[in-house]
Image (cartoon, rainbow, N blue to C red; front, side, top):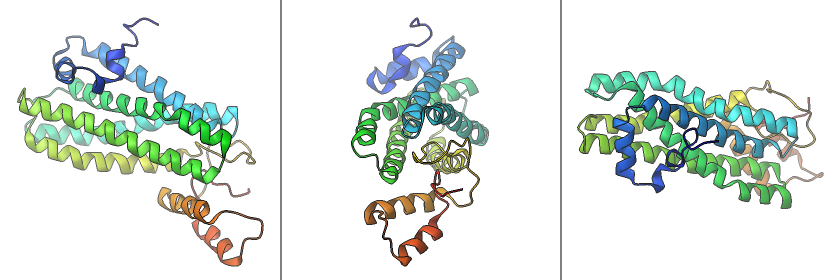
Length: 255
């Protein structure tokens, strides 16, 4: 694949000349091609991480998880972007839609690259430990940490646009911080509805699982299972806790 299709300068903007990279995002005459490259990088990187997630259970689960993770990223942005863009216009931003899309995609590409860099650690724990609940929490931690770096990259680009080019309002930088919180909640809700990404090995393949509940009780349940351990002689109180916190993310409940 040629560098015109997958340009490494699009992959890790945080490791490049940041001002030069941001300048390119604002003044690139072929910004549509840059957006296409960023989108392709995002699909490739998130698909690869999704495959690693799902291969804990089966190769079919790995493929579907590889498809779901890019869908999760793109849907989250698609749902949240219109409100963000309209608010920026109201606040006085002169940034075009394609410029803002390129900036947001660059941050997501950085986040997905960081996610993928954690795969050797994830694979190590899959091969040596294989604790389902620990892997759940590990993936949640990887998503959160990578997302923080990605959002910081976007915030830096917006600050640069405000301070150096005066095409973005200072108030908009503050609004973006609130938007990232909204984006995170939308992403978590979509992740819950798209589950399973990671499934237990003794469970049959399922494209989706129909359970009530939410991601927060799922994470809490996994944390409790990890700290207390799971044995065949569980007491009645532990069974009650399991019933309370089920269904949880990628539920292991028997059908």
